[in-house]
Image (cartoon, rainbow, N blue to C red; front, side, top):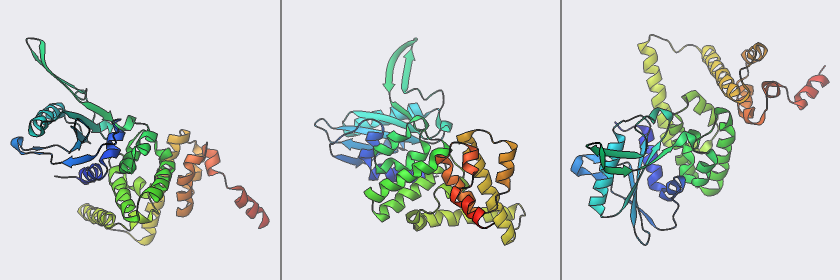
Amino acid sequence: MVKPFDTALKHLLEAHPADYLRLVDLPTNSPIDVIDADLATVSAEADKVLRINDRAPWLMHFELQASYDGELPQRMLRYNVLLRLRHGLPVRSMVILLRPKADGPEMTGLVRHLLDNKPYLEFQYGVMRLWRKPVGAVLAAGVGTLPLVPLAEVGPAELPSVIQQMKQRLGVEATASEQAVIWTETYVLMGLRYDQALANTILKGIREMEESVTYQEIIKKGKAEGKAEGKAEGKAEGKAEGKVEGQLEEARRILLILGTDAFGQPNAATETAIAALIDPKQLEELIQRISKAKSWQELLAKPRTQRRNGRKGR
């Protein structure tokens, strides 16, 4: 079954091939064609194959992997040989592992076959572990790689600041419709690493995404699945007050997760202060301010203007 992130990644690679070549340190100014990757002779399909029209043309095969597959190196060898036979061109092969869950002992970048304990065939392929890729390198690769930014080497506490950088770039380099697609694909890909509540909080207020038909369909489907699951478990939806309290609890949980990543484990007083927060807007503002604060104390301190206003009212 094709998963949403598969579709998102293949679309991004097809729409922005040069950006992905920069991402894997193979930049080119030559024209690039996305070619048919269907290798029907073995009922297999490679994720994306690009033809780079240098003076001596060559092919770039990308495989994007979100889960561990011990057979992947053998498939990479098979794809490489079949693409070479089909197109008559040299082929570079690159695996992009999207999260640690996709990594494993077989992901060495080398396939070696032995006979009588001697190698008779060796095949090398590239391996990029996206969570180890500096976030600055992913940001710099191009607009097409921006949805991968939350999966790069970035902590949860840094996400609001990084998302803001993405927003600034897209505002300059992309049309409104392009921004809607990029943000929606960012939302989908964040699901590989973060829970939906955190993605909703971090990306809240991005108009282009919220107006996207695809995003609305994702949200609608998620609500429908959640409702069905709730019925199956015999849980009622609850009243409006219960919903608000649930949202507050989720916001407090996200604040604790992001804050712990940035400042360390909170003490009892800090946990009590967070538990006492009942204003959703204030919780959202605190989450957004994490990247700018240096400690729990600084984060939770009231702004000076608010303290002055409080004194005037007494």
